[in-house]
Image (tube, rainbow, N blue to C red; front, side, top):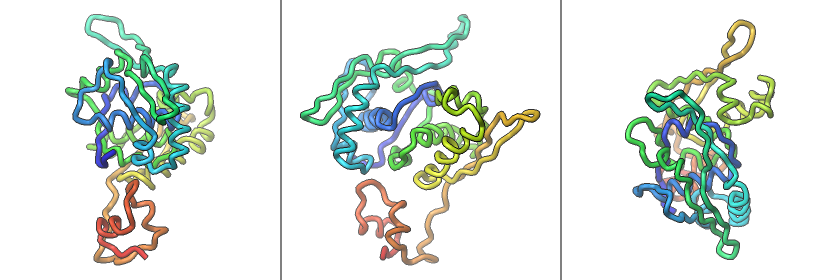
Length: 264
């Protein structure tokens, strides 16, 4: 699968309430990226194979096989909830599935699936409000919360700041029952997600909490593009320093040329 592919989702889908495993999310992202330039629909039987995931994410072939098999077992029963407000109607919550059918072909190491009809407008009819980013921004992340938080932040790329209500974030990530205290949420969700975003994505994020009265009710994130490495002031990098700057599948020679430094 070629690099520099784009992920494009409606803002409503980015902010929807759902919970996926890392493997399930990678399957969805791989399909969106692989179908770049095409209009996604509910009639096509899309295919994502293990070798494509290996090439895209940089994981082992065995891990890719296991992730795809697990995704095929779980994804059919996953649901998405989004606020729905059509002119003249009372606002409601719409709930639908990701896929209408899915199968795992073990001998070929691939998943075939059709998107659910109700999902298509959130992936295809993106005339106005949508979020787009290169898939390379998230492929090295191993936390589903990091990927989702990154999407929520790049929605506000033009301002470099986003304030998120904690109750809304828990509902959106569907983790309210798992992390009831703010300390647990920060320790197990927010801090690891920010660490991965700062390590693997092109933005640098800082964050703080905000109180309403005596209770912490919001998290405030401020972010900006990372400053590019300046070859004039840094001529060499160790492989340990350079490995986190490498793109999936990129050789040391290619990385050295792209950064303009010597990798020792």
